[in-house]
Image (cartoon, rainbow, N blue to C red; front, side, top):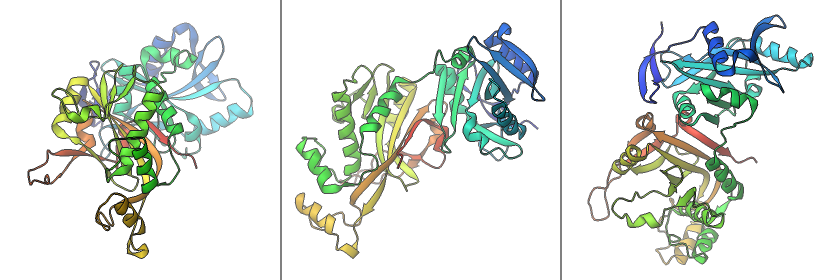
Length: 401
């Protein structure tokens, strides 16, 4: 029986309802509607009746399946396309016989007239197809495609997935439009220059920030401030102001009407925040609840830009050698922050999560902030759950050893 799950309405709002799955014939009719009848046909290839789309330069075989909810007890935001076993043998035979077809695994999502096509790039899936396998897609991925026309992501298993709004499908297949985000390109540039894969030791790193006159060089949680220091420098050196502005320092004044977040995406008109997080932590610190919800309601979306690092700390075994050196340099008690000070970190990966009106409530959990030094209660904050963040990911980068 079809069970209720998350759906995207034509107005981009969220619905909880049953899937409106298209039959194979209806899927073909949807593809013909967007690709043009003169370019499409159904014919036998290697013993299988397949859908073929032809352009002046290439012929595509679109092996299509409906996108549908996995069913209880799976999360209602998670959907799938079933990949039958014969896909693997079919692709291998196409290659062996040197047939000039570009074979694609296409999912077709439909709800209340909304159509999104999903191209599961087949290379990684071919290695995993055993009997009937599944390729997964999240409701936020479909939302991104409907909002922007295209959406591409690499999931946690290294699969590349493209979601395409129906009216962009022909442009996508022809390569005329790739949907590559200029913002993601800028983050790729920053990541290529950032200190991924290098052990950063506490004293040399804070001295680097001090010499650069970075205002936050004295902060004990130095990895996050070092990330902000490097990101600010990147935005200045590369003149990114028309697109990205680092606002982490200017917003610290918390002027009325100004959000205390690190990044303002000027052209696209929304905020983001940089976070450094231990790679072993199950959650990353979030932001003040009231400000965050106000920001989402005002601008429609928010990006958490999370840089994860491996971490080492001192212990009694080495007599807190690095802690003592750090505290001596900072004129603090020699064992201040012992056991908690990160004596070195190595950044290994980053992830951008988009939180928007349809998903932010599920992304965050309340974090007990305790009290201020004067005893007053701190404003409640959110914590970002890492356990199931793949549904929110819009961009990820993993350092290649």
